[in-house]
Image (cartoon, rainbow, N blue to C red; front, side, top):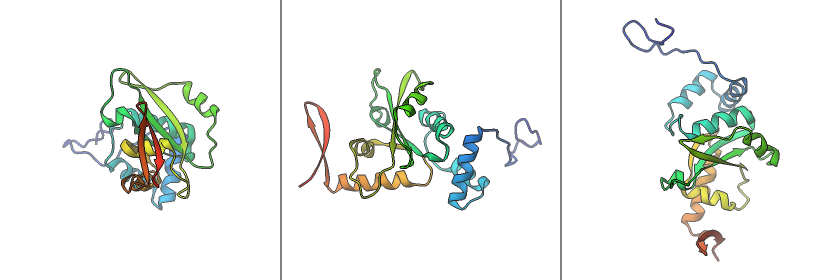
Length: 192
């Protein structure tokens, strides 16, 4: 086997490769695997083989950076807004939610730390917003309602983001939450 390319002399992949990664990412993956009741190897195989967005896209870069900064406090990442809808103009940025455990305080220090190395993708600024994953008993905030309309989940450690978005989408579909506009700006209200 050629260990530089990971192939056997017959040009077939061996099914084995060695990967070096940041210690914080390693720790987060190990913890997620334990939480899922899987070996680290099986967890990573499932993660890599799951359908999802292009890892070279903005979501991959945001996720990698968020794992490094937040480790086990990271719940996941989703993209939303005009870029996620495929309606971005030349002036559009890329909006992303970095979802953290509810116990993680969302402070200006988080934004200052993130902004030390701003992210760009294909010439667009990546605008990151930090949010906690809300309790099911709490009414969804505007940002979650907007994300439910067009959000693309790019990382979801244990499925909580997908479940929360499904709940918010049910509220929208049943008319419990209504989107209105005033002077061209959207806002959300509760149906009577």
